[in-house]
Image (cartoon, rainbow, N blue to C red; front, top):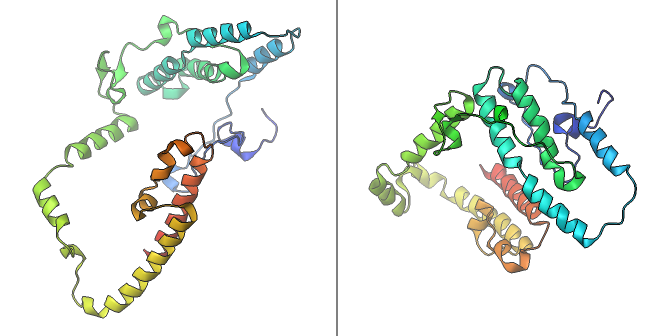
Length: 258
């Protein structure tokens, strides 16, 4: 763990097998201090013990038994929820000893199907007695969280509750064309240039639509490609990459004209 490692692994244990990273240079989002990487050596030792054991020829019965064991031992969701709740309410947050223990258990549970080592069951001490309100555990005791997650949740709820304010006015305003808010004084001076730019924009959009076989412009704008929802593409493994390509291409066009 102390030797130089690839940057994806340094960031979050990534191994470039489909991992997605989001990178920002915004100063408010840059940590002042880098934490030491988490030590998973105990897990690796446990896996190595299993893999270095006597070679056994497995049968379909062994596969069925393992599948049953996997279903019975699958507590990944419980571990994740416990970690989130404790990190929200305990002193030191995610650095609290309970959270560190749950983090190790989570790592084991994630790789159980691949490595064959299952996480221990949650003890009473590792089960929260109350949950932050943003987890929406309506059947459990909850409290109003003042952490950033709680504040973000409240903001979303606030905006959601105000979406339909003045609904009739909104419908009327968006049903009239041309939109009055788009009209400015001296607009006639810009009409010719606007038509040229609109023509170039249409050409760029149609190029994307032809390249990917997209029928409607709104699919390009939203990234929701209708043909990707058909049975023909149900087993296509590169759909995610195609969506990203289309979204990226459209963003380039946006930056060109905005």
